[in-house]
Image (cartoon, rainbow, N blue to C red; front, side, top):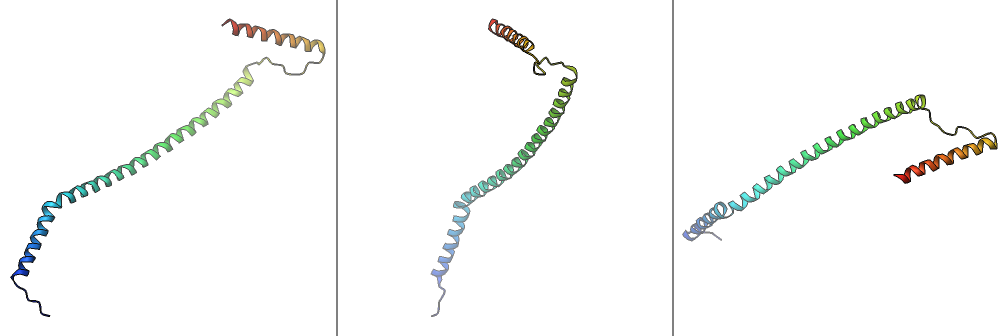
Length: 125
């Protein structure tokens, strides 16, 4: 089976190449350019997202460090305050159980009088 090249085959080849060139450069080029531009925008947005995620994690760790240092300072302050309170402030409270009935009734009267005064102060406001 011999294939002979004649003018019709050459004309079809030229027609095909012309159509391919026309489609590729004039009809498909804008669509390909749009797809390439969207792909590059997608890649740049992904890069921005990863950089923002990194900066967010860095800031979160910095905030966590600040909270830890604030907690340490707060604990130190509380310990100093408790030492100051125990040394310098006298707290009026019942420190021991009364020894006899007379002392017990005196404490009960004292406490009830203080409660009545506090209640009157609260209701008068």
